[in-house]
Amino acid sequence: MSWAGPEDSLLSTSLASYLDKKLLVLLRDGRKLLGLLRSFDQFANVVLEGACERVIVGGLYCDIPLGLYVIRGENVVLIGELELNKEELPPHMTLVPEAEIKRAQKAERDASDLKGSMRKRMEFLDFD
Image (cartoon, rainbow, N blue to C red; front, side, top):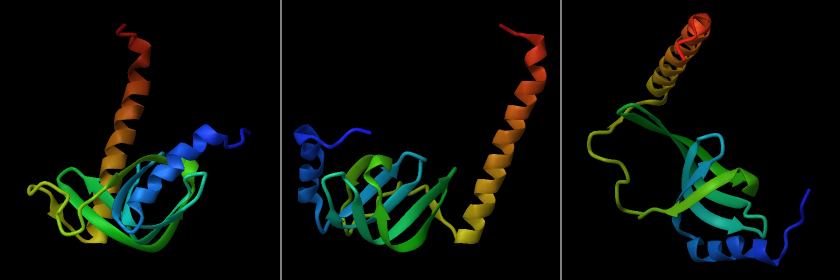
């Protein structure tokens, strides 16, 4: 385990300019969270107020409300500022209810699993 040194504090001090602003936070597992930055520390742990998870599947999207959310700094890949009053998505994206986006996610995951299992079955052919 490494300890935060002076060079590590440069990352978290730059977060001060984002306080009380709407952010998009991309996590290591691929999730995208939106919310107002209320606090952070020297390890880049952040607190988002009014957070929601934006789930995008194809041309569909849904914002799942999470409330007050604490994010461990080691899970953060990217932080970007969003404009409060501006829509962030292109016009072709369609807002759908949470239940529908969950079904779309499951269908996408099932298709990916099927593709992976078919690839494993075909490995013996050795196309390389």
